[in-house]
Amino acid sequence: MMKGTHAWVAVLVICLIWYAPVVSGEPGQSGNSNSGEFVNISGTDSGLVVNTSGIASGTDTIQVVDSLGTTVTIHGTPRRIVSLAPSNTELLGSLDLMDRVVGVTMFCNYPEEALAKPKIGGFSTVNVEKVVAVRPDLILAEPKNGQETIDRLRKLGFPVIVLKSRDISEIFTNLRLIGAATRTSDRADQVVAGLQQRLDVIANATQCSGTTPTVAHIMSQNPIYVSGNNTYQNDIIHLAGGRNAFPSVEMWGTVTLEDLLLLDPDYILVNAGTGMVNETTGTNPVYEYFTHDKRTQHLKAVRENHFILVETNTLSRGGTRTIDATELIAYAIHPECYGQNATALPQSTPPVKSPGYAAGVACAGLVLGISLLRRFPRAVIS
Image 1 (tube, helix red, strand yellow):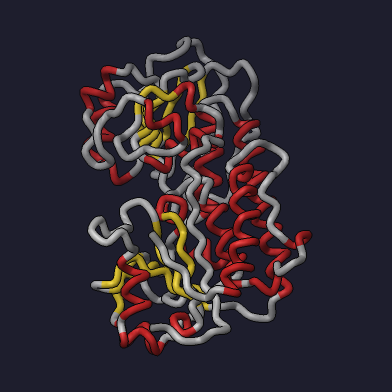
Image 2 (tube, rainbow, N blue to C red; image 1 turned 180 degrees about the vertical axis):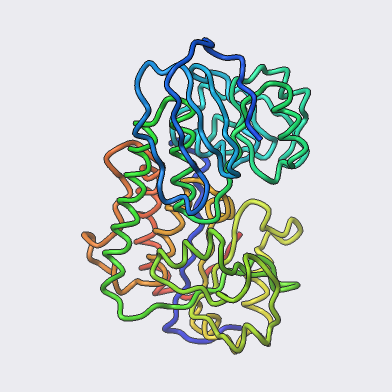
């Protein structure tokens, strides 16, 4: 049984699935083969700089350099897009391009329109024949699709852009890459600007704090599996005004309970929702482990009920909802910067339509939730 009647639990479960926002590759078969301006848009290196200055209306052919450094030539405006990763599908939704999508993986469940799209296999088990059957003129892949699958699709004549990201800045680069490839660069720039504005608001709000709380993102309890550096979660924690409790772990790795007790983080961040519920008991096993195991009661985060539960796809996919997770984590670890001052709350409605609209509803509920949780320190997750 946990102690501390003055402690509070920040349970931030984002359930946003009900809204929908928001080697040279061989040229595809779409559009005209007339020569046009060629534009280099690079997604390599740091991903902080994207050159879009050469894009002009009426251009028939462009070249983009994808995340792996491959130059991909695209003729015309893609109208039949296949996404081979859930993160790519989410980015397409953010750019209002779902009406052009003709195929997704069985794991692409966001935005909602993705559920009705033809399925072309799994994430690492892409069915090439099904991809060919939907006649795509652009394919958005991910390294985990496998180089053999990517090479095969290119040899069949399809333009394949491979997108990867390790932090939010690279997610922004991917948005711009998709925008360039689909001739929606203006929309991509608007979405990125709106998301950056929300990050700026978080940074300004959390300046009121004189502390940088440590946060341990724990994905499993046996063994204890955590996020380290070069991960979305590390970036999200930093941008929310916190510090990763395990910066020495390279990407993701296991730690011992002794390691965790020694570092004694201020907060424990746990994935919730999809794939994180015990089907027999209906509970979150990681949360239950820390709240019930006698050994973990020595942790400060447990004693003070400082748990943050965020929907797993929001926290772990390289999509625009990572900004939603950043906002909510900032709320949890810096309540002193928000409190009752509504003007300090993150603004989730940027100038253009983006996933922030739904986040606005979530944020409003969260303010009330935090207030209630301060009165009732124990929360039950189902």
